[in-house]
Every structure is written in structure tokens, then in C-alpha cells.
Length: 348
Image 1 (cartoon, rainbow, N blue to C red):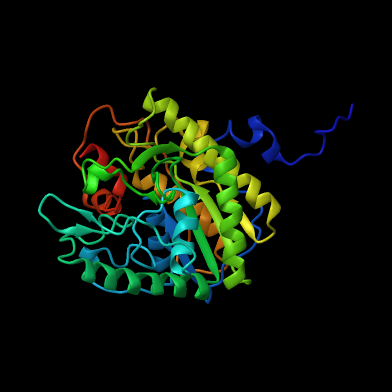
Image 2 (image 1 turned 90 degrees about the vertical axis):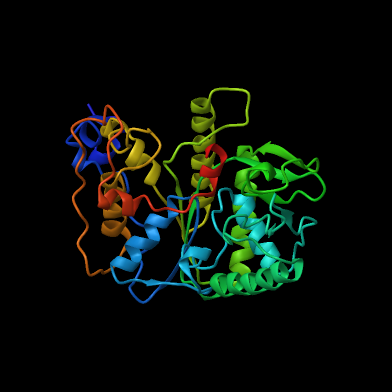
């Protein structure tokens, strides 16, 4: 007897699509568009976003860089030196600041050694700034590079990472780190905020409208980082906060991508954390994604979204079981783990 599910593809059924050999699980589905080797690609987001840029460069794609300088000073991690952008509110704020639509009250934080840091990029300048004039000059140059990125890119990939954030009580400015982590240890004008699904969706929608105003041709991919929270400020277990955060981000990305024909969702989170992996794509910390996990994500990304590349995607290989105890990092893992992650400073 026929029912509404009769004739649905194998991917619609758990038994046929998930309860199979782990390496055969492919939750991506049909891509909304393909990325050509000639497309200028920009990325932004949480720590996991950096794996995407490395894969694009390695496979010969045109990774857009609009702000150059020494890597040890935060250049080259992303197209412009903006550091980690964990939430859609941060991304929308960066756009508005770049185009003069928002000028935050907070301009500089002071470190214990007297040096200044940019509160919106607290870790990109390891030595800090000697004067407010130097900070302003660097900031203005940076925001010009951000404008070039938004206007010149053909494809923009944003990895959503967190819902928990710290905001100014004066003007609502959002910071990537709490003030005591980077500088200004006692600051009464900054408060904790955990974004809701309505706020996240509204910020993504507003960002897309503003982005299209300066770059109508751009295609966008949203993905959710599989990396758990390093800590929560909510009065509850960090595991509960992690699931809340990732769930909200996932639903918001779905809402926007469904309503925008040139916005796609790529399931990085599902590939790494899905039942089929048995959490074997995490190392002993249960936070860091292993090289095999990164390869699984980027292999499927390459297969579905990259129109041509110089490198065939690797077949994902799951370890037999998660490591039972800390192990020494081999050179490959150390290289893959060299990811700039502002959030790690919370528990350093």
C-alpha cells in the first residue's frame, strides 16, 4: 500500500541513510549552487571557519584576502583582520561599522601593561597599541579592507559559533570576548546576553539585506561550527548551554537559507556530531575536531560545492573508537590544530 513516503529517496530514511557504513553517510543533499575556481571566496566566523579557507587555498581556489601583513599579527587568518566572529550580531555589527552606520562608544580597552586593545578585535595585535591614534589608524585601515571584502567577494561563507555574548549596556555593541579576558577587568557598562532564535534570525536577515545592497551578486553559505562552548555564563551545565546554542544557530540558518534562493546551508555540525560518528570525530577533549573530522567535512564540501579543484576529496575514515586518554599530537594534528580561537582565552 502506498503512503506519502513511498518513492522518497534513500536520504529520507534513517535506516538507509544513517544506519549504514559511517563513511557512506552524506547529509548534504543537492547544492544550491557551485563555486567555480574563478570565484572570489571570503570566509568569516568561529574557529572552525579557518578549516574551510585552508581547504580552498589547498585546492587552488581564489581565496580573497583584502588585508595583508605578518601572520603573527593576525593577518591572513580571515580575508581581513577581524578575528573570530561568533554570532550574527557581530557580523551585522562589522558590516555597519565598515560602512559608517554604527560607531560604538567603546573605542579601546587598556591591558594591565598599559597597552591598548581594540575591543572588537582584542587578540589580533599581540603587543597591543601604544596610543589611541595608532589604534584608530589601524582600525580605519581594517574597516576599509572589510568593505573591499564585502564588495569584491562572489561567495561568502559564514560559520555560526555561539549565542552567548557580551554587550555594551550603552549602545548594544557586541564584543567577541568578555572584558576581563582581554583587558579592562572591571567594566560596569558591559553585560552578558544570550541571543534568542528571534534575535539570531533577525540579525541574519538584516545582514543579508545590507550585504545585497553593496553586492547583489553574492552567494552565501551558512554553516554551524561543531565545536562545543569552552564555557557558559548561564547558571547551568555547559553541555546544556552548548546544545541550546547550536540548536538556535541551526534553526536560524535554516530559516534564512530557506527564504533566500542564493543562500545555502552546509551541515558541518551534522557531519561531525551525527549519530553515525559515535563522537569519534572529536579528540580526547571532546571539543577539538580531529583531522579525520575536518577531512570528512571538507571532503563533502568539495564534492558538493566546488565545481573543479586540483585535489580529489578524501574518503572520511572514522577511528575505531574515541581516544581513552590524552595522546601526543603528531605533526599533522598539530598543524590542523593551529587555529586562532579567541574563545579559548576564557579557560586559559
